[in-house]
Each structure stands twice: as C-alpha cells, then as structure tokens.
Amino acid sequence: MSFGIVSLAHTLGEPVDVDPVVPEFTADVERVRSWGYRRFHRAADGVGLTDLAVEAGRLALERAAVAASEVDLVVLAMSDLSEYLYWDAAASTAARLEAYDAEAVLLGQACGGGVAAFDLVGGRFATHPDYDTALIIGANRVCEPYWNRMEINTSIFSDGAAAAVVRRDHPRCRWMLTETLTDGRYADFMRMETGGAARPFGGGDHERPRVLSPTDRLQDFFADDLRRMFAFVSTIRNRNREIVERACARAGIAVDDLARLLHFHDNVNAFAELAKDLGLPLERTNTELAAEHGHVGCADQLLSLERQLAAGELAEGDIVALTSTGSGMHWLCTLLTI
Image 1 (tube, rainbow, N blue to C red):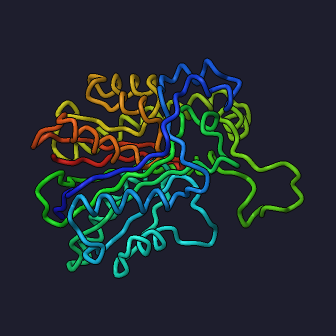
Image 2: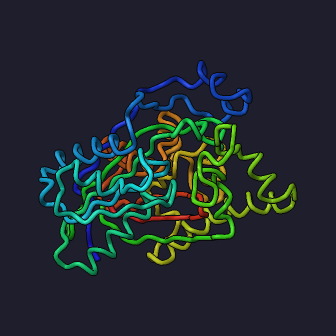
C-alpha cells in the first residue's frame, strides 16, 4: 500500500521556560532539571484537546490545498483525556473541520498513537479502494486536575497537536511499514484507580483522584520487588531497541541506514541511551527538538518531522524512523522514505 505525506502542521500552547517554574510543580527540582528540557508549552485555560486538534488539522489541510470534503478518513490519536466522557473526540474533530463525509477513528495508544496511525491508514486504504485522502492528528492536552506534567513520568508534558495530510500514491514522505510490540502484562501500570466504571467518581472518596508518581506506581505495581522493577525498566529500554531493529529488518535495511530517528520527546539521558543502544549518533535523533518543546504526547513525532523537513535536514530518499513507547505497554516504529 503506497501513500505519502502531503503536508504537516502543528499548534502549541504558550512557551514556558522550565527552570523558573519547576518548583511550582514538584519539590524534586534537581531531578526535573537534569532531564534537559529548556521549555514546555501550556495551553490557555478553556482550550481543550480537540481545540488543539482542530487547529492543527485545519492548518495541515490549508497547506495541502485539500478541502475538508475531500478527506475520506480522520484519525485522531490522543495521549490524555479529551474534554468529555461518553464522547467521541475523533467524530467531533472531523465535524468541526467540516469533514462530514469522512470516517473518524479514535486511537488511544498513549504516546504511540501518532506512530500507530500510519498503520491504521495503510489498512483502511487497503480495504477501502475509494479512500484517497486521510488526515492524521496527534493531540495532547494535559488534564491538570489528575496529571502533574512534571511528576507523572520522566519527561515534561506539553500541550499541542500535530497533523499530517496523507494521500494514496503521493511520492513524498512515503510510508514503508509500521511495527508494534505490545505487552499487556503492564497494562495497569499507568492507570488511575478512580473515575472508571469499577470505581466511579464520587464514590465516597474525599481526596481528589490523581495519577501516581513513577516511584509510587513502581512500588505498588511490583509490590516493592526491586528485581521486578529493574526488569521492567530494562524491558522498556531493550524493546525500544528491538522495535527499531525489527522494523529495519522487515524493510531490508540496517539501522545505520536511518537518516533520522524521531523518538517521542523523552529526556536527554533517555535519548543518549537509545542512540547508544542502536549505534546511532545522537545528532541523528530529535533530542534538541524534545528539549525545546517538551513532550507533546502522541504529537511529538509529527512535530519533529515537520521541523526537520522545514529546516532542510532531510533529503529525498532519506529513511526516517518514527518511534515511541506508550503505556499499555506498546513499542512502535514507523518507517518513512522522504
């Protein structure tokens, strides 16, 4: 199945310098500063996830000179909660873009949704010969009542969205393949205990529900078993390497053939480890863009790809890997040929 990216676009919340505001989010100031982020983006009050998605999607359509009526498929990937429960954020986004005749699909593979979307589009194009144009959107809006953007993980979370218009048989930025590894044994690791059908809001809890810190989650999930904790951390690192190797092997190329590896916007130490594990120079990654923008959830890879294309850092024929780790747990790699 052949399709390529016609245009890319993004929108971000207001930029915020990291150093002055870290104490507002956490007492573990030095730990957060050691991650190497310079800025993150925070959306204004009242701006929701689908607001960001619609803005990025509309700009991508304008850049591609594609009318909303031409879109056959809208894929919305999101890595935090949308504005409402019992609600289809993808369908709402498509409607607000006036893509009334498009199929709308919602992806919830956390930070890997924007990478997984390419595989979904490939499948839809294969089974729907009449589909020619799709809009992929990755969006993240930190739900701050439940989620501390500097304490929940080893990255600083940002608000924003990135979008790609893709077309069947388009010759640029062509999709090669997508590889995914899923290990459901860790599906409960990121969950928030309150708010679902098993334990609804308002069930007698007096404290505001929150997603726990990584340390607390590790201790709870692995019952303070240090060996299991270290094994989990090792598994994450090993599978970050494995998924890239598997994708490259399937494509018949070596890892060193990759012109760029655009990972989710992790911290500088994690980028250094990943580059070392894959035998790639750190300069072939998007670590600088990560430090500049923070972790924009499942929008990271599309945002980095847009920025590197605009900067002239990618040439025709270059092979680029979009990679991610997502809670679930999922490890993903999509290969594109520029």
